[in-house]
Image (tube, rainbow, N blue to C red; front, top):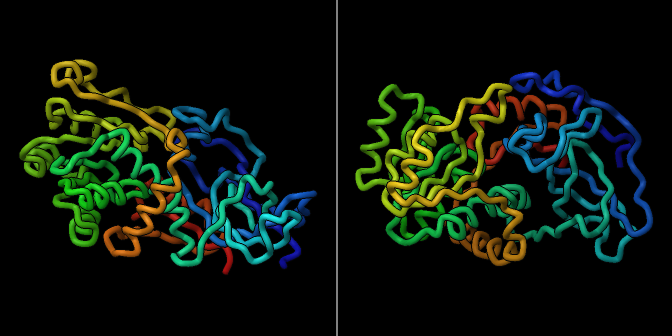
Length: 335
């Protein structure tokens, strides 16, 4: 065991866009687990866009932002020492590790990771991202066979899974993303029927062409102008699943809300609903079993976008907020 614990601390809160300088690296002693507790060694961390909102206290369920604390995050970890009869050294678990090498937890905070599938999937397709895609599409969106499902941030951690799940259940998937390269990835590797770049000067016409029969479900990860564009393509009695607002996370001056609300919602009888994945915690096990079977059968292709080294976490986060990721952004911390 290493004799020191590296930690990425929140040094200052961002005034506008997040910078690597908002973090600092500290080294401290490895923590000692108390009675009934477990010491975990972080192997892989995930970096999610939603945690950016927690740094400014807006549109976030994370509470008021703080400095001089370890940056929060989830990880796959190996049990190094256990004072609990529920876990033994060598066990793999998921835990709220934060951005650090070692962390101590009560057993209730740990979830066992089986070894019949890549453990990193428990931070992506079998973790919060996959569960968000699953419950957002099927429970909130009430997807039916034949539905046209439009997904924004479609190459992102949640979006790249939503389109694939829609296809598995007999839907038509259309993605909105940033670049032509990502559009090609969506259609060539992830099964999307069509993809549109919001940076194209013809994006509105492109979206109309990609959705000739309108949109039944819009899975919104962005808000802002893209939500406004999608509203114009919605069918009568369609559903908008409000999952995230990535267009507003990394700025101190977010754009105003989209035009067309509530007018278009009323005229087209559109249902628009936000949700938190934690609302469906009682059904996590069933959903994970279903998604695991899709992965094993080759129907679901989760993409993990990795940086190597704990010290690279701030750079990986900043890059992700600038649209640099494809799939779930992860940090490899240890073997």
